[in-house]
Image (tube, rainbow over all chains, first blue to last red; front, top):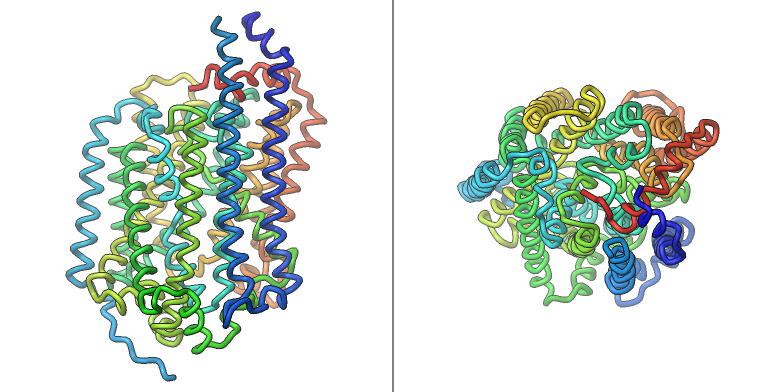
Length: 100
Length: 517
């Protein structure tokens, strides 16, 4: 391994990049799990709540199911916005150090 | 209100169905001819030369994932069982964010053609490649059998073609795509299919809503008027929390172990493109699962459950029937042709994934020790494609008349238990070892298979025993944690200093893309 690679691997900036990426991934995964398994467990344990009418016939369950689908997409979009704006810039900075 | 009798041309090959079908086949074969001239190297055959744009790959991922089972099956489930079908639909989307957060970018940076590339990256090639290829091929083969049997049945219902002929036609056409056009043709077939499917379902949902002055509330009221408030309430699908979470785990994390989905990430130039393509795919697939229930509820309100059941007891013909009612025979022909194209595209993707495990993982890395000429790689890839395609047709015919509804669940359970745990551990855990990887795969695959065999679905319903050996219908809640545990315990017992040292080195590639293919 080239010395410049070794140096970069050991640098605090690289450690910060790795731990920040791990943190973002874990937080978003946790939110996804709470949202989806929360929805499933709510159905399994409290059908009356999901069956409550919010319109003439429409039940609360219908917008909740749509919200799970929309929520999954929003979480994905949040990740992409973070990665494109912040993570990619950090990656680029570190890669430039290797080239110089 | 008595259901109005529906005159249907379903099951007879009408002129419009045949014309739409031939047009789709002609278009896709023309694309294959174009792609064949651009497929000269292994990199082009397996990974489309890494030249696919994020939007194109997003469409193709959606095309790979939205099967006829989800289109016709979920519309039917919503029509026959109401809200339960909506619950089921949500489970099919939630794997995509997880795929993005945990796997997509490291997979792109570390691998070359298959997910086994990533697991084997710093471990001993031969044992890991063999184990990963077994897990991958098992997943793809089970999924393919389910698709082929579904294809035979659906095409018989839609066009009136005998089952065996339907399976053979699917086999021959998709082999033409993969054999000559490789990943470039397969990608464009997926894009065409995704566009047609999304267009067809959108038009169908719009036609349904036009009957209810574009008010979903009015549609729901019509369904309730006919089948009672229960149609909009959770029914019998989710009752046991353990069972429900187990199914959810398999659907969500199984996606992260599906070889034909994972290999699509190698078709884009870099990690950023991989990331963007997941965002597009999640949006398209999410939209699909949001509007499918409208089609299903529309079929219940306008066609009626009794009529749908008369045509097919499983309810799979709900969407085609409501298409015929609202758009006449031409629209039915279009929807039937789109369903056929959907099956072709999914089976083509699966065949390419199965062939890559056979040729790239087993032949090139195990038999030849990673040393094979470009010419040889291409020849073996094509032989493997023919072997896998022939197996798909033979197994499709062998399983005729079998109830294979459990097989898609089995494929996801194996993917979540045998493929996903070693893939994730190899990316995130420094002390993961060769023995640990093999142990995780063997444990996950064996347990998933054994638990499904003893489950109520197979042991009681299919094999006719009185009581199940295993109370669970879905094994993932047991088999996936067991695979992780086996991987961790065995790794701790067999330290591999070389793999630990390489883990530090590969970090530049994992996180910065330095040296990525």
